[in-house]
Amino acid sequence: MGLFDKEQVILVTGASSGIGRACANELVREGATVVASGRDARKLEDARTSSSYPERWHCAPLDLAGNIDRLADWVREQRQKYGKFHGLLHAAGELVFDSLEGLTPDQARKHFELNFLAPVFMAQAFARKENCHDNSSMVFLASISGEHPEKGLLLYGSAKAALIAAVKAMSQELSIRGLRANCLSPAMIDTPMLEGMRVRLGDDYMRREIARYPLGLGKPGDVANLACFLLSQKASWITGQNFTLDGGEI
Ligand SMILES: NC(=O)c1ccc[n+]([C@@H]2O[C@H](COP(=O)([O-])OP(=O)(O)OC[C@H]3O[C@@H](n4cnc5c(N)ncnc54)[C@H](OP(=O)(O)O)[C@@H]3O)[C@@H](O)[C@H]2O)c1
Image 1: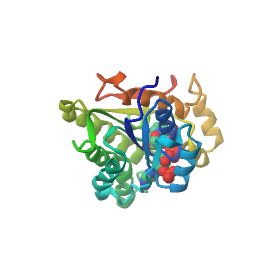
Image 2 (image 1 turned 120 degrees about the horizontal axis):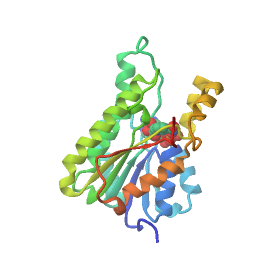
Image 3 (image 1 turned 45 degrees about the vertical axis):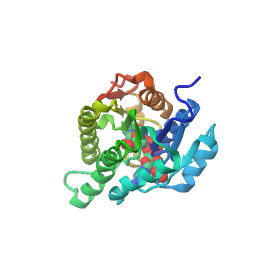
Image 4 (image 1 turned 30 degrees about the vertical axis):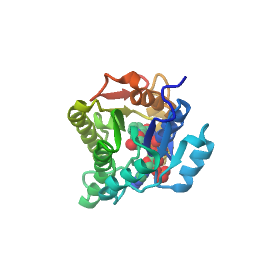
């Protein structure tokens, strides 16, 4: 028997790629039904058809950029279609490189909208009494950059740090209903996002970075295993935490 049953519906953002896709796959393998979101409807449908249980994988494309004001309606529509939620896994996000010198207010606003405001307002919509069961669980993809931002990750690191703080605060507010909220902060995980980093910083940089991981580069499944546990009732006394996954990085 898995961690979930098919009546347990989990909303997964970023499900068209990388970590979010691996989480959605693992959740259906563990018995849950997922409502899988991403920007690209075609990639979402590919992910659905290649999952082990496509009948418990529903596609719900949405571009979060510019749609924060619509989130409450969108979550309500998904709940009316698929039933009250038991969990939220928010993986949608984007890595941008910047420099203090070149930063523009517009770039900063856009970045914070996707990597900070979108998860916070997704949490607000999800946590409404009519949308989720009491004792539901939310898991957000932050990043090791939220605690240790490197050069070039001013916006990315700051947005993830803000997300970690917001999740701690919301966990306190929501605990009265038994609702839980936690963050995962991975170091380098082998996904299309990392490929963008390789293109930008080069193969030598990537080789040096990967050499710092005693257990090798992380895989999306490494993150999905912990996400599934935190979304399940096995983690019913765990909230307000930020879990580092770094393969022992030195
Ligand atoms: N990979 C790593 O090393 C790493 C490390 C630490 C933290 N993280 C975090 O983990 C999360 C997932 O990253 P990943 O590596 O799996 O990246 P990825 O493979 O590039 O996937 C990113 C996902 O976010 C979705 N997305 C991006 N912009 C969106 C928008 N405007 N509206 C809706 N969805 C949007 C993408 O949808 P489309 O495919 O449809 O565009 C995709 O499903 C991110 O929050 C990232 O910051 C990653």
